[in-house]
Length: 145
Image 1 (cartoon, rainbow, N blue to C red):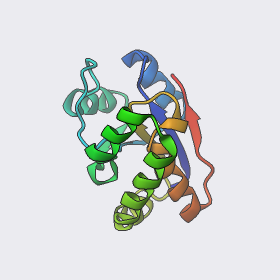
Image 2: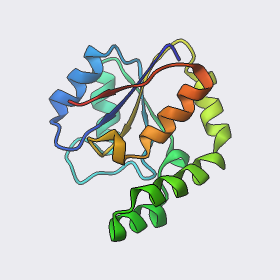
Image 3: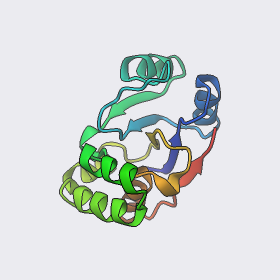
Image 4: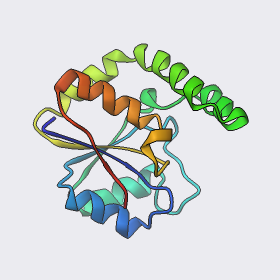
């Protein structure tokens, strides 16, 4: 990877979302949601991949890097993000090979990690970005369309 950004689509229009990715020069969007579906029109896997392709951006889903439902449910019930991130980082450690594959497969490209939350501080994509940064030395930039 030559560049690493993250982006959440919460409250973003599809137009603003795509524009932010294009402005950042993104080559590949990596969807790190466990299930690539959304109640928001345009942000489910097939529709999103089609919209990205029209902008010349490749779509890649990495469901193994998503936050498992029990971890998501626990933070919804109690709002304890410290516990959420502790559980998620333990999950991420079991998928170190997926992170290795991303780093290898996407070397030299501008990559965006995507999930729902606008604020990366409360989203697991921040933990994925930190792990990639640790392995590559890249400093992630967090976009807010």
